[in-house]
Length: 310
Image 1 (tube, one colour):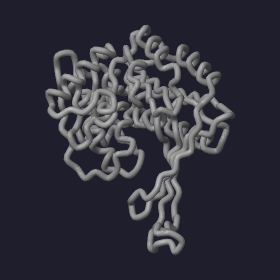
Image 2: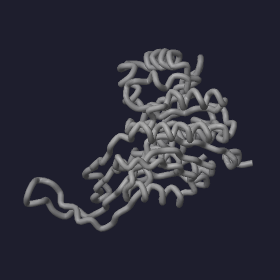
Image 3: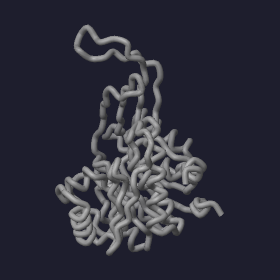
């Protein structure tokens, strides 16, 4: 049996802030006469799933049966997201809030380098979020694991209730956190902050021992089973009760780290839902992250690709 065979029947429920990643690719051959900025002659446009939608896309690419709950505006970007999710085989329930614009991140790329990013976003209304919570309640019993992907765009206003409902149904809950108010994530199974996000919450550390002490204190305060810190070139470290598991970074040329956290939490979720132990789950997530940072923009790792790398 191959190492990833067990994930074929896994059912995941992803909830969070979705966004549309738009890319404008072009040539840069001169500087503007109007201001000291490069002129990009756009030659190609591309749209990709971003935020929680990219998490769902990563989970589906690994073979997990993936459902997604989120909020979009009644606009072209929302319709593009819906179409891309359908093409990705994701069962998406997108609440439409006519009062908002779907979050869009527009990146201008010249010579394989990001020159500019422009963000369009508004926060969803309370009524739409309440409907999403009711949808969550209906769906949570039929999944094997829940991912809450918080991008700070307002789509997870009821996150405490969602954690409570999922844990009450005995489902593991994985949270990709945002901001410095981590109290709302209390009771989750694991949270996956990156190095700078954790520093925002617990302060700086000057040694591995100090990091371990701060991580353990936070894990205890929030009642988490585990805390996974993704650390860029330092790899990733998992803090469990009385145990620390470290995975060094995969040595490869880093092309683009955007979306790497989405790949990590999606891979971790499918592995845990398939019955893998923590050590195996984070080893696999680390390998997946190593593959995805070698690709431009928000990208995914296919199951065959990951199996070959493992």
